[in-house]
Every structure is written in structure tokens, then in C-alpha cells.
Image (cartoon, rainbow, N blue to C red):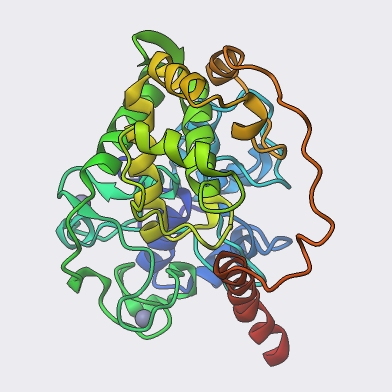
Length: 365
Ligand SMILES: [Zn+2]
Ligand SMILES: [Zn+2]
């Protein structure tokens, strides 16, 4: 295989898809042509290519670009995710804390976000690998919130649908709006703090929770536990849990905008931001104060742990300090027969909205 005429090296923290797209544009060809030529048997833009390629698929890419396999690996999400996940990464399952692209054919429902000021300062706009992580909601450099939709047409970011004639990645693939022109809203201070602490933990492998050194795996599990409490507090958990959240420094009606019930990795940045901000407040309180407040309210483990949640790490030790279970409650047989709550309707609507784009493609194809 001969080398390509124009060599483009991946930038610092550039995602694999971003680099592939810039490579295609530099050769003056559409992304589909480039991928079809490199991997004729695969439809890589229907997959989350940012996760990583197989060794077999990396080989032709190295050959035509002259870039080494280890440099290509630095662009892959699996290199980051493997630092905070204990089980082997499964290609067919979603990965924790990686934003879901929700793809069907080449159409997506989300997964990418960007800082307008970063890409407007880039000589050749590119997507950062860390923007794919769910705890990233802001740009620490510019102090603004990340953007995950085109502000002109509200479409998700789908740079893989751009053409060579678009010249660079700072363009909306649906309406051709210049994504660099967005002013950006100020970052949420607590969400940014959580992002910075978690990034540090990812680099070092550890951080501190309640004065104790914990692994990044433990830290993220604790964060997910508090996020679940925040999301559940308006649903079926009862007054004591709402009081606990309040005693941990969160106003009773603090906006969490989490009515849809989608997994954290599917939420838009505007919904993840308040959740992560409030989770930071709850983590900052520390485990001793959390246990003390929960005990004073007479809470037991089963009131705080969602049965679908498989908790691991230090948060399990913290919860072990609470009584196991009170008298088992039986769900009222008439509980499900009444009119649905506003939150239940919002959750159904969000799921339908994600399916709607996908079905539109099926009808057209
Ligand atoms: Zn920025
Ligand atoms: Zn647009």
C-alpha cells in the first residue's frame, strides 16, 4: 500500500474519528471514500470508531499515514476507559462514562460535544478525545460549557457526514452552520470542579474521598451512586431521602433537570451539568457526614440503593455502615393504575425522541 500524498498527524488529545476525518479532507476525499478504501469490508461510520480499531484495522492506517500504532492507540477511547474500568471492555456493550452515539446506519442521536472557542482557535478544527467522556461538560481553558448540538438547526454533531468540500470539521453536517460562531455559556463552577478532579484522578490513578485515597474506579462509582440518588429523589424514594439530599447542602428544589430517565451517557450536556454539579456537592461532604446524616434520618441501605445498580468500590463500604433493610414494603397493587406522573411522561417522550430520528432513516431508505 502506498503512502498518501498529504500527511496529517493526530493533534494532542484528538479523537480517532476526528483524525480520520481530517485525514480524508486533507486528501480531498469524502470520509466515506477514505474509510471504504482502508476498510472495504466494514462500515466504520455506523460504529463508535472513537473507541478504537482492531490491530488488524490499524495496520493499513499506519501504512498509508506513516503514523505508528502506538500513536494511533493514543487517539482511542479504550486507552482512557481502561484506566477506570475493572472488567474487560466489551465491544458490543456500552462503556461507562462514554457518551453514547446512538447510531443507526450513519445517523446519530448524540455522543459528541465541543468547545466553540477551542475549535475557533484551532488552525484545523478538531474534536478532543476527552469531550467524549460523560463527566466533561465544560472547557477548563475557556471557562464555558461544551456544546453538543448545532445551535442553528439543533441537529447532533455528525462530522462524519461532512464532505471534502466542507474543508474543515467546524461545520454542521446538516445545515452547514459554522460551529465556531457560538458564544458559549459560562461553565458551571461545581461541574467544572468535578471534571478537573476526575481528570486528575484519571491521570494519577487515584484521588481522595473523605481524606482517604481511592482509585479512580472507586471515585466514579461513588459519583454514580450520588447521581442515582439525585435522579431518584423526585420519584419514589420518600421524604427521608429528600431530606438527606437537603442536609448535604443541596436546596430542596435545586434544578437537576433529570426527568427523562435516560442513562447518564445518553443525556445532553445541559442535563449532565446540573447532575454532576450536585454530585460534586454530595461527594465534597465526605462519607462520614453522609453516614451521620443518613443515620439521623433513620435511613437504611435499601432506601438509598437502586436495585438495578451494581455498586462497587469504596461506596459499598460506606453503605455497609448503614442498617441493611427495614421491613420489606410491598408495592400497592393499584400503584401503577393511576395517571402517569410528569416525570414518567418525560421519560417516555425522551425515549421516543431518540427513536424518531432512527425511524426517519428507515422510512427514507
Ligand atoms: Zn475551549
Ligand atoms: Zn445545523
